[in-house]
Image (cartoon, rainbow, N blue to C red; front, side, top):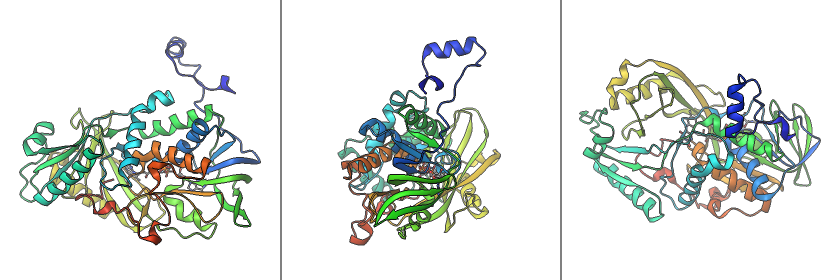
Length: 421
Ligand SMILES: Cc1cc2nc3c(=O)[nH]c(=O)nc-3n(C[C@H](O)[C@H](O)[C@H](O)COP(=O)(O)OP(=O)(O)OC[C@H]3O[C@@H](n4cnc5c(N)ncnc54)[C@H](O)[C@@H]3O)c2cc1C
């Protein structure tokens, strides 16, 4: 089986370069589903694939399938704006997102795959005194937890990104909160890297396999019904992001999740301009530049429930207005493409990694705008929960019952722009 997969090293690169690139092998097998598995992970996005990888790597489980209804990375994993950061305020979130950042920092070596992790910095702009105070508070919380954060004044921001409209009459830029270790990672490569690494450890990745039902017996999961037949399972793990409420409904569970559309945009390619990630503090707009030269930007959710992976024009207008307010020069740029993804919005803005009332059924959901940056830690902590039936320390606060007990992790109250991914 191993001989059929591509191994990446300097020698194989040279051999392929000299032989006309004709002997590259697929990065992972296209598996046919078996009759049953110890663990079935539903959802071939970043979280599902990372979960399978860490189940195999950290817990020695290999009889695992990842079932994806479309192709892997066709959901939010391949639709996001690729920003990674750990600039959170709330105690439940801080250790988790910093764990994720540390995993990003070693990910390429771990997976032996170029995920193009680029720690180019994430700069949140502030435009008023109260907003500065909110960012100072967040920065202090980060530093107290050993996370890098720097509060910049207007001139320090100007030295970094001189092309912003600092003197806009309505929203003058006063400064910003910088996390230098934040940045971007190539989202497709993250999916492919985890898929390849999981496959190398024996995980079956099954594409074109939609789960249409979850079988239970006496309150315990026994398997899943799929478009490719019935598949038995000792444990079933949901990692389906915007479709979480649909899958949970298959066993009669109602989740504190709403599905909303979030759109993103890329412009035509331009010369290198934006060498960090910038978020506007006075409107719904954030921007970075891809390695191909396109500006990648986005804004707020469309604001109504939907399972459609496409958005509507009012948000396009809102994002473009904010873009023009911050960087008037963008008015001369053409938008090349825009698209939408389905966000699993939880009611306190924080995720859920927990068991469910159905024995053997595990839930990973509620990522809102921010699940891409969470991919490594989400996979690691979800795998820990599935393998050991106890939460990982870093994700212990992400309980499903917090919405009943009132122990919310209300990150929405943190900072002036919690809406920005
Ligand atoms: C426009 C946009 C911009 C974003 N920007 C950022 C950002 O900059 N930074 C950040 O941290 N986060 C960002 N996010 C959020 C992030 O992308 C998500 O939170 C994260 O990708 C969700 O986890 P996932 O990768 O596993 O989800 P997905 O990739 O959506 O994976 C879920 C998979 O489940 C599959 N599935 C669903 N139902 C079934 C079924 N019945 N059977 C089998 N398979 C099924 C879907 O096809 C899908 O592939 C953004 C999201 C969007 C849409």
